[in-house]
Amino acid sequence: MFFSADLLDEFASLWFQAPLVISSRMQDFAAAGMAGTPGSVAEASRMFTEKLSAAAESLMALNTAMVNEGMIAATAAATGTCSNFTDASDRLAVAALKPYGKRIRANALRLAK
Image (cartoon, rainbow, N blue to C red; front, side, top):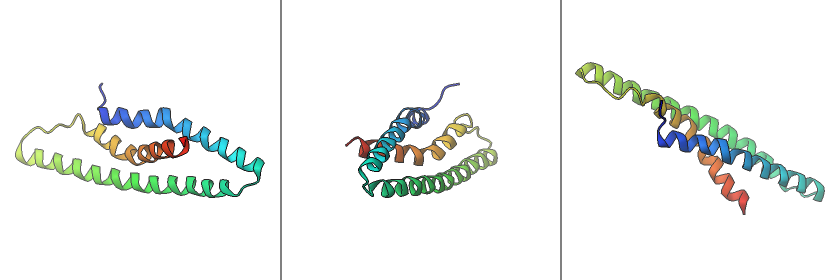
């Protein structure tokens, strides 16, 4: 089974960049804790709100993609044509993972500075 390039891109973000973002944040938390600066509280709050908003956005994107795939299937059944059902699972997975990958890539750029 071959995956689409979009799906592999999202998996790569989750697989490679997410641990780098986590380790960078942990280093920042440790440094802020030793220095006694309040910056770590803001970063922790940002981390949790990003996760919640990514989860909500992911659910909305997945629901929208499922409706689109259902419409494609219904149209194919009504017209008697064969639609591309084999890539439907990839398209759904990309829709669900894209909000997480977008935030991971943005955080990797921001924390690398």
